Structure formats: C-alpha cells, structure tokens
View 1 (cartoon, rainbow, N blue to C red):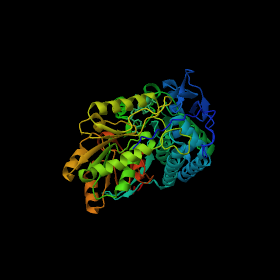
View 2 (cartoon, rainbow, N blue to C red):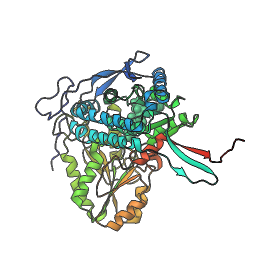
View 3 (cartoon, protein in one colour):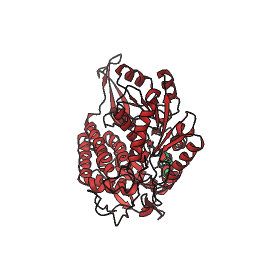
View 4 (cartoon, protein in one colour):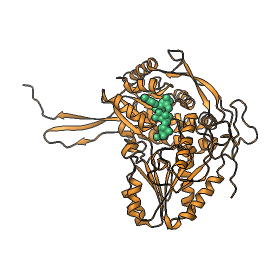
Amino acid sequence: MAQSKPTAVAPSPTQPQAGNRGTAPAPQIRQTQLFIGGQWRPARSGRTFDTINPATEETIAQVAEGDAADVETAVAAAREAFETGPWARMDARQRGRLMLRLADLIEAEIDELAALEALDNGKPFADARHIDIPLALDALRYYAGWADKIHGQTIPINGNYFCYTRREPVGVAGQIIPWNFPILMVAWKWGPALAAGCTIVMKPAEQTPLTCLRLARLAQKAGIPDGVINVVPGFGPTAGAAIVKHPGIDKVAFTGSGETAQIIMRQAADQLKRLTFELGGKSPNIVFADADLAAAARGAHVGIHLNQGQCCCAGSRLFVEDSIHAEFVEQVVELSRKRRVGDPFDAATEQGPQVDRAQFDKIMGYIAAGKAEGATCATGGRRVGDRGFFIEPTVFTNVRDEMAIAREEIFGPVLSVLKFSDTEELVRRANATNFGLAAAIWTRDIARAHSVARRLRAGTVWVNCYDVFDAAAPFGGFKQSGFGRELGERGLDPYLETKTVTVSLEERHIP
Ligand code: NAP
Ligand code: MG
C-alpha cells in the first residue's frame, strides 16, 4: 500500500491559513510578563526568552525570564497571601465559588485559549479545544466541589479527652509543569492546591508559557485574591531550582522527566520538603487474541499517537498475542499510515509537530537506534516537510525487549510492537521496567482482565480502553514513574497536613 504523504503546512501566527481553520480564532498574545502578587512585571534581570511556534519554528513572543530574584518576590507574595491575606480568612465554600468562576471564565474563552495552546505547543487546535481544555475544566470544577468538604474527624482516644483532627493547607506550593499539556497541567496543579487553601508559585515550561499566563489573568478576573497564584516563567535550572530550594516553599509538585525529579529530590532534601512527582512511562498495552481487534487497534493507535506521542502514559510497548500478531499489526500500521500530520490549525489535522527541536532530535535518534538494532520500521520513521518539527507516525515491529526503543521513554509518535504467547511470561515482561505509570489490557475474558490488571505494576490499568481520564479517578505512578497521586480525593492529600488536637476534659474546680 502506498505511503500517504502528509504535508506539513505551517501557519504563521499573524497570518493563519485561511479556509481550513474550522472554528479556530487567531490567538492574541496578551500576557508575557511575570505574574506576582497580582501584578504583571518584567524579570528583575530584564531578560526575556523566545517562545517558538513549533509548526513554523518562528518566534511567537518574548516572555519575561524569571530567575531566583523573581522567585524570591513571588514566594514573599505567596507567603503573605497564605498567612495574612483574604485567602487565609476566606470561607472554604467561597474558595470553591471562585474556582468555579475561574472555570466559567476559561470556558467563555475556550476557542481562543485552545488556539493559543495550539500555537505555543503545536498540538492540533481541535485536540486542545475538545480534549485538553474540557479535562482542565473538569479538574477545576471537581476540586471546587472539594473546597468545603475537606474536614477532620473526632477520635475516641483513651482517657478523658476530646481528640479531633484538622486538615490544614500545607502552605505555599511550588508547582513545576511540563510542556505537553500546558493548560491541563495548570488545572491538575491549581485545582487541589486551591481547594486545600494553599497558595502557589508556578513555573510553566519554557516551551509553553503563554496559556499559563493567560490563566493567571483569568484567575485574577475571577476574584482569586492577589498573591494566591504567582507565575514565574523561566528556565528549570534557574527559576525552577530557586522554587525547589526556597525555604518559603512548603511543598513541590513536579511533572516532567525522571532525571529532573532526581535533581529536585536531592535539592529538596536539605529542607525535607514535601514532594510529589508525576514522571514518565513505558506503558504496556496488551492485546489478547480474543479481544475486539478493531477496537484494540484504535486503542493502540490513540494510545501511542495522542498528543504527537508526548504523553507520559503513552502505550509505547504494544504486546500482541502471537496467534493474531500479523493481522493485528497490519491494522495498526494502516491506521498510522492514514494519520494526517500537518498544520495544527487545519481542521483535518490529527497530528502536529513535536514541541521543539530537542524533542524532535531525541525522537529521530531513537528511530535511528531502532533501525540500527534490527527492528523493522513498518511505517513512518522520517521527518515530514522541512519546516517545523513534524515526524511521521512510526511503528516498529520485530522489537526485542532489550532494545532501547522497548526500554526507554521516547516521548514521540513511535510504537514498539512485541509478540507474546504465554500470559505468565507476558506479565513478567510487561513489569520488567523501572516505570509503572499505566497499562492496558484488551480481552473479552473478564476473569483474565481482572487477574492481569491486579498483577500489572502500574498506577492506572485500562481494560478495553485507553487514555480514559476523569478528575475523580487518581492518576500517578508506581516505581520510577513518580510518587503521590493527582486527581480524585487522593490528589488532595499532598496539599494537606493533618493536625491532631487533644483537649483535656478534666474539670478543674477552682477553690
Ligand atoms: P524536564 O526538564 O523534566 O522539564 C519539566 C519541567 O521541569 C520544566 O518546567 C523544566 O523547566 C523544569 N526543570 C528542568 N530542570 C529543572 C531543575 N533543575 N529544577 C527545577 N525544575 C526544572 O523535561 P524536558 O527537558 O522538557 O523533557 C525531557 C523528557 O522528559 C521528555 O523527552 C520526556 O521523556 C520527559 N517528559 C515527561 C513529561 C511527563 O508528563 N511525565 C512531560 C515532559 C517531558 P524548562 O522549561 O527549563 O525545561
Ligand atoms: Mg526542558
């Protein structure tokens, strides 16, 4: 079958492609400065950095480059808001109302925000509009509902005492997020922190600062008091590290790579800072011969290629039972061949560019390694066009467990297909990784589904589906995929301290 030839049409931010844009408006760049204590300000150093449109490699805007001096100011604002500001005295129910108002303001601008996200990140406008932002709204509204439902217990301890617990906010949360789901990561971080009554110093990824800054503006408009949310764009080793090391930060929530998490953990050790990590994965997606193969093929396709393959939970190791291997792989390869790669603003586009040149180079390096190690590149494997960081949806077959493409996180549209015949052996191989973020099983055998789900060492197991997210369902990793959970009731825990209050009920008679 002839390889389809996707063409990468790259829109300029000021002159987007006309005709095929669907409902995408031209995004306005309004916020490019630091947001500290409710004010927009340049970096103390006066420095800025470029944020790039990965579809065109053109600069979209210059953004203020915060560093340790700006983090100092941001932490001071967040501490003041936490300790003495209106936020500290506000009724929990009112906090929830402000969060709902923020969600409503985001929803009112959903098209423009989706366009800004597509411009800065490269993801298809339609994905940002119909996947990322609806999930972000879901998280904000879900946690708004928690704000007035966080409470302690009374505990029947021995003796004549009244003992109760209080659930108190942990304090100022430092939140460091990646570039793959910028708006969604903001919502997953702000939601539980605000519900708990914390204040925030956030550093968005250098590749994608624009929507986070826009959301800070909307938070202010919603009435969230100044100083509660502070945003310091900048680089990891400067602004990020300053957040991690600052004694005024009580807790760090980080999503990104394991390497950076190790640096953060070492740097936070001096102050025994509370940490939660959402890191990478090499998630097994397992297809048994009795599965609905058409559904499983779509699940395998979306599981790897969603968001240009830049998903921590990507189903990047596809284990296929040998009796259906040939037939199944053909379906998966066919779907990859048909995937439309191109202009994120074209309504027909399913896959945009990778986020930046570093990611592009890393992925192309893995593709070269896969070929060199003897895997078969069944489709894809090449750059698309010569401008922008577009890569063909790629499927490798004849992959062996020890190859780099089967072991390491590629974070791109590259699938490794592995064959299995025995369930015991399969479970062992699926678990033979330092990661443990997600897994999926495709089968019609209900006993096998539950039994394999129990034995897989992963924080999320999908059965006959993939990438199903809900704000109420906890998400996070076993092993080196992280610790702590985001979303659901468990997602509140890292933002809360438990205080035990014990009161003597001994009546003291004053003579
Ligand atoms: P990264 O370095 O871990 O970046 C994530 C965030 O951490 C960014 O905001 C980054 O700032 C910041 N950071 C970097 N060094 C820091 C430090 N020393 N102290 C505090 N914060 C720091 O990830 P990346 O370099 O963008 O991507 C590398 C790989 O990480 C990817 O190929 C992928 O495998 C993995 N990744 C995983 C996820 C996920 O969702 N789990 C997301 C993104 C990437 P900068 O803006 O300066 O980078
Ligand atoms: Mg980076």
